[in-house]
Length: 573
Image 1 (tube, one colour):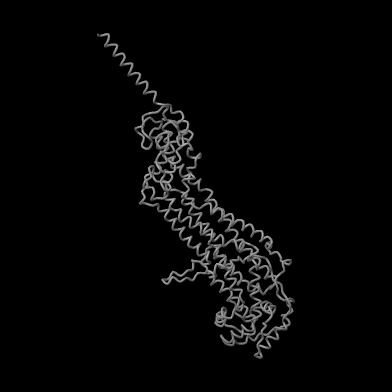
Image 2: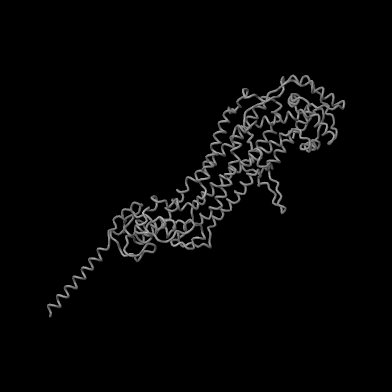
């Protein structure tokens, strides 16, 4: 009996030892986890060699684990850092597109303005000499204001161009009637007749339509690239909330704690985590897409001006044509001004018409293509034609890049969770938040409101991200400017009165009008036939009260401007 009892005790002891041995065999090696952990740059001090009890874990599944509390905290911080880098890397190409294209287009437009001013200055100096140099500030101010407008200055293009033509009219009117003395008040009266008399023909109207639409489109497009750049850079710096970091840690590093560091997340599991973490970014998408559509519309506007064949004549030729028109109509213009503003007083200054006519020997005319010179800056029309073609390709390129960026923010989770890169393509051999196996929950929709049913990330749908809402408003404002620019309107100058009327600096022309970028080219005018006798006859006829259809010669105007200002006793504004 005693012997039987001892046998039973021995058997029980062996059974307990066997169970203890079996329990110890469940504690697997942590060698793979240790290797992966140190590869992240962490120290192996206090890292277990075998699995330990995991009651201390706050994020990863409890049970046997290779992670201490300190390890879990470090992996928690690592998850946040890696997520931020994932978003930056995924958005890198798109953000770079806006940065590089903004720089390229901005440099081109500024170079175009500089070349145009140099071209006009070189041609008019060679053509008119002192005439132009003594009055060059009128033209310099024109380009200064165009540059100031383009770089964001508070310039009303229509008013600025109207002022340019008014100033040019005042100066030419004094030169064409240099035998009279004009006060400032009288010249103010003269400028009021600009629209009524149209002394420069149709050139101001056409130039205004072309310049306003082209410059509005150019400036707004570059501003759009800048806004896109800023919005993308700010949104790419994600505000990672604690609930998101917890979900990221569970997805990316809890496999380490389970001794399976090489196990990638299941594809749908990754989608739910990323859609929860990027819910606010996805809400940016609708406004972002509208912004991209508006950018593409303005890019279409730019393709016309960037076609060199569409640029019929450079601005210097257009202004010279306007001067010729003023010359041809000077008698009628002067007569109507005298009628409306009163007869001015004689200046008492005389001059020899014959002496003046000897200064030049030819009638003004544009250069032929074979005669086109190169400007002082070394920029020929042929070179600008190459630049135009290059920029034409740039417009096509940026349009393709813009199209690719549509739905970027809502597609960002897809890009990050691409199979084979971050996630496992085999749905049965992936990490499903607890172990290796299939992930069963459904993938939630995009955006903040859809995260109410997200099984992985606890998202407060009542508290949208403030920064994202600010970027949505910035895009909305820019989209409105782009749409107005497409229609030729600059909302910077729109009237915000209750009546809703606008006084923008758009051309007001319909979609069918041209949007040629006229500030380009190197063609210069030359002086044509001597018409001094015709001018003398016209002056005599005017003194006798007769009406002539032809006006004074441009040569006379040119020569008159070369006289000392004091001799003409005129006030130059």
